[in-house]
Image (cartoon, rainbow, N blue to C red; front, side, top):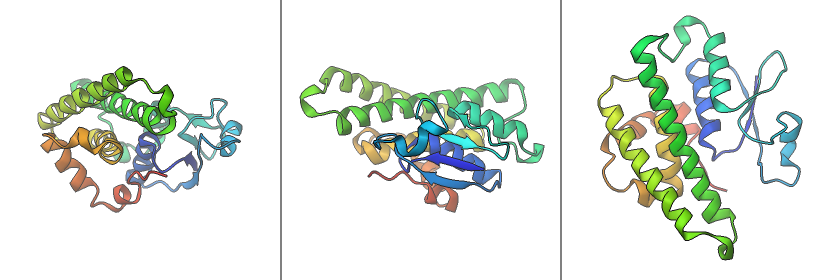
Length: 200
């Protein structure tokens, strides 16, 4: 399998960690959606977005949730990271949805502040994004405190927390003790440490 994506994307990281915890072999191809030619992304995804996973069949898969669904569906039952059904699955899926939303807002704020020229930045929009990220992180911290450990939930939460810790550390300075502990513990694992987000 081949995984396309950069070193900062929390969505690429979530897929890479899922692959690692399922003990699957994958070739990483580092690309940038900001490169003039999309670093070849358009050849595997018409939208030029990451992540893109090309399985052994050769048919590219894109969008994080669709890739995760494929990995769960094709994994040995003992290697699956999501609960099979019922309330436990619904709770984990909500953690994944909340984490994904937090990560999306973090990336939107990063693009707005680091990629958009200063004269065209919108202060009110940045403030709204910061509120959404902060509220989301507090809600995620509370939800994780009240549920038993889940590899899938902790992967998603760690990716959402870490991207904001790297890009906007002021948003994670207060509280979030449960999320901080999950991130610290996870990033002692080689798979997490090796995929920690890097700017540039």
